[in-house]
Length: 365
Image 1 (spheres, rainbow, N blue to C red):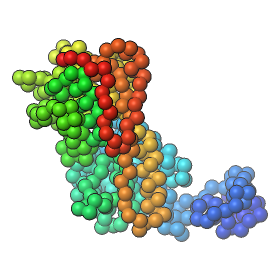
Image 2 (cartoon, rainbow, N blue to C red):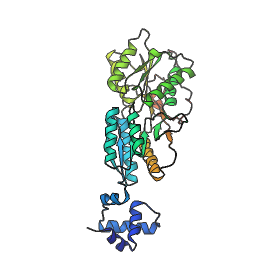
Image 3 (cartoon, rainbow, N blue to C red):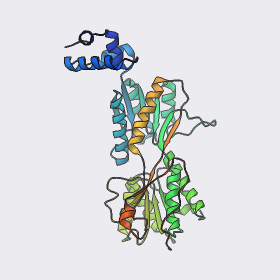
Image 4 (tube, rainbow, N blue to C red):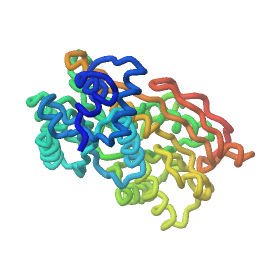
C-alpha cells in the first residue's frame, strides 16, 4: 500500500507539503498542489484517517442531530449539510433526537464521544440540557432551523442558521386579507419551538397590518405533525364562526389540514382558502395548487456547515445568527382569480427580516 512518502517522492515534494495539501493546513502553490493530487491518483494513495486524527486531534467528521429526517424539509436540509461537508472533506454522522429533550442530550453525547469535530443540531422545544452539555464540554456547534433564546445583551450563545419565519407568515396573512378574508386562522406548530413562536408573531403582525383584530380562538397548535394539523383544523372548523381562510405553519400540518377539510366535504379555495408555510415537491400537483412560503432548505444546510467550519477555524469569535430569506410561491389555493397558470409559476423572493409586500388580486368574501 503506497505511503505519504511515496506520494512525496513521486510528486517531487516533501512529506510536509503532501500533508499540507491533504489537511489544508498551509497554502500550497497551485502547480505543486496539482502535482501532489496527480501522484495520489496515480499511486492510489488513501490517507489513514484514524492515524491522522490521533496526530491532529481532528477526525474531519461532523455530527448532525435532526429530528423527523423523513420530513421532506429536513431531508433537503440534510442534502445541503452532506454536500457542504463533502465539499470540505468532512464525513457526516447522523442521529435523530426525536424532538425529545432527554433523548436529544443522549444523542449529542454519543456524537461527542465519537469525537466529531463539531455538531449541527436542530434543537427541541426544551433545549436546556442540550445547551448545558454543549457549553460544559466546549463542543463547537451550530443550531439549525430553530434558534435558542439569546441572553439579555442579544448575543447568541451558539452560532445559528435558519430561515426568516415572522415576515413570510405575515405575508401570507396580508395576502389573504387582501382577498377580503376577515377570519384568518393559523394552525401553529409545537409550542416552545422558536419557529412556532416566530410564525405566531408574524401572523399577528399580518393581522395588524391588515387592520384585523387578533382572536386567540383562531390559533390552534398542530404540534408540527400531520395528525396534529388534522386535529387542529377540525377544531377550527367546529367554531361557531369558523375561519374563511387558513394558514398552516409547516408542510406536515398542511397535509393534516387537507385531510380534515376533505372529511368535512369542504373544497379549497371554494369553501376555505389555504396558504402554507413550507413548499414541497408535490405542492404544485394538488388541485388547487398550494400557495406557499418556500424555505431555502438546502442553502440552510450548506450555510450551517460553512458557519461551523468558520467556528472551528476561529473558536474565539463571537457567535452569530444567520437568517436566510424565503420565497413567496403564488399559486391558486389562496383563491386568486384570473390567469391561474401564470400565477402558479410566480415566485416572489422575500427579504430576510423585510416587510411583507402588498397583496394581489383582492376580492370580496
